[in-house]
Length: 345
Image 1 (tube, rainbow, N blue to C red):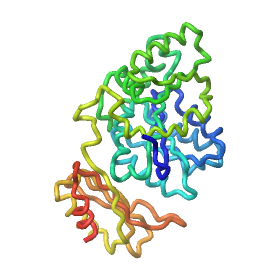
Image 2: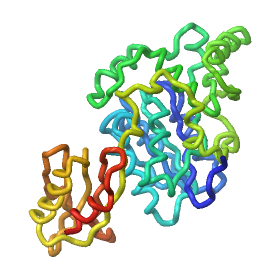
Image 3: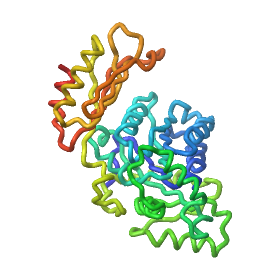
């Protein structure tokens, strides 16, 4: 199935810390031939650094405000909390973006992230153009899946949200198994024998015909990476992984949607409505922002299980349209109409 022209294409770039994801994306930014791009960065260990590198490119078609950093945890484990709101921000940008690049955490499993593109809140607005796995050529040639295994262990220890504790080799296999294109990075450091060993390690985990492209310093023609039009979310069952059928890391067992409301008169009124929605037992998580009439501050709203809280987090920015927008994550088959009614009452 090909991607709908009405949906913004997204390219998922996965790979371990140090494999060369950021370098590859920076090259895409610098050679995108005027295509308006946005980037979601989710990296740990180098959190903040990757975003600053990409923001500092000085490319007019990807201004700093189009680079969003997700620093609350591995994107495949916090996809409902962080990814959907980040997409909302990007899709609201003017002028409209032509393509979104998503740089995942080095420990992310791409399949759960791709499955999120089937959720009602986003499936009609975006599509997965393709999944790109960046692998470290010299490390593979030496029998390792990453150059710095200690850094990966530190990255794992630092991420409290991580809900999968798999062997690094299994994460590598899942990343490769989901890929539509594999970038063999640092190929300039490989002699023919080493390159052959690296390719053999990759090919041992490929169940599909996937092209392996050698790259030095992230230099790959963006035409090879963007515009694949694969609508990967519709082909996800053909990407077998170690986590297929695993109850602890499937993200398609709940639904998420966005509720836009008019300004509220008082925070306690909104809390009452949110509490009523949560009390149905169908809402697992709710978060968002609210415009309180007569207040210059934005009200942040959080609900986890029965716990509901709200607080003013910052003033509305100059030129920013005050709004009330809530992201609801609930059980599969949640009665959306009922929840929307309770939140609007």
